[in-house]
Length: 455
Image (cartoon, rainbow, N blue to C red; front, side, top):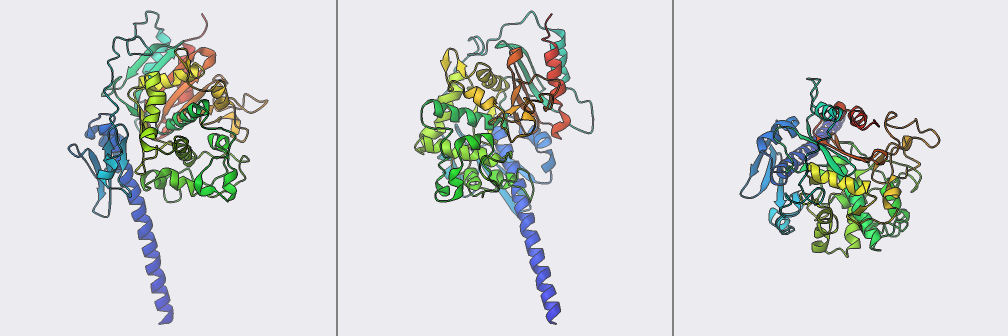
């Protein structure tokens, strides 16, 4: 009887633990569906049917719907796991985790009407003169990006833009998308956060060499972590950059009230500065540090990306979303049109200068492009990906056939803003590739570069 009782209790405990894990994963799934549906409808202006069929096709087993009157999206699994995302003016959508929809709406602000830029020449505006010198090779490379050569996978390229010497020389969209459609950058948001940090460095409010200043780390060994180490992803903090029960990504983004607070709980796995590990948690810590540099004032913080960056370079469509705690989700949630993502790349192609005004510190772009020694094959700088190659062995680089000075912002499902200084090129590709490797960035860029070979 005693053995039977022990086995019964053990089985019950096992089943309970399994049920809790399943419920937790279901909440992550409904959170993902509700958040992307909300932002897709109210930020990107897309039809729910398109989002449910493509972006959320894997979640057809959930009941997901939009309430336009309340400006919310909800996803549910038989009443056991339900998530709601709420749209806020100026801040996009956030999941109602630890906050009511009314509390979330109070975070929003009126960004003001978008000015008509149709008659203002590119890049300040959207008037793009017809280029009579378009190359057939360039057209072919752009068109090829929209092909679907394998019926078993989905490339789903939605937008491509090519800038040469700052001029918009190629632009194409998939059906249902156009120059006015904001699209999610996913981890390209990390490069946006690094840019906002740079603006505060220029203003003397932050110092890359100084301690990160995370309040909850005071008095422990994490206090030694510097802002530079966070930018380079060499903080040494433990963070499992993967989805599912064993990862931190879904829990942080879709089950937590505060992404930065979730990341701040990470403990040291390595001595700071000794080990490189790609971590979305790191970028959300930077978002919290940005807030602290603005004295923590919500109104100032929430308007900062628009006033300090987006409006100044013409990224009028850009929306950097916050979580329920009001912190920017610096790892993942920035929406912008393809043209505005191209403007972002152009700022970097111009060394942080826009129309004669320096927006980023002198040397900041070079700093972010300097390879982090601990990263493999010279592939990472500071919140930007590189193609630099190993020290003394440049051929050992991610894209051996592409220039070593190439650097790029990269996001989930194949989002790219690529800058190639040696060819004076900025290339944007946005899409929803399943799996991510369905879109071959190296092959695509090779075709673009071929169109700009010297005559």
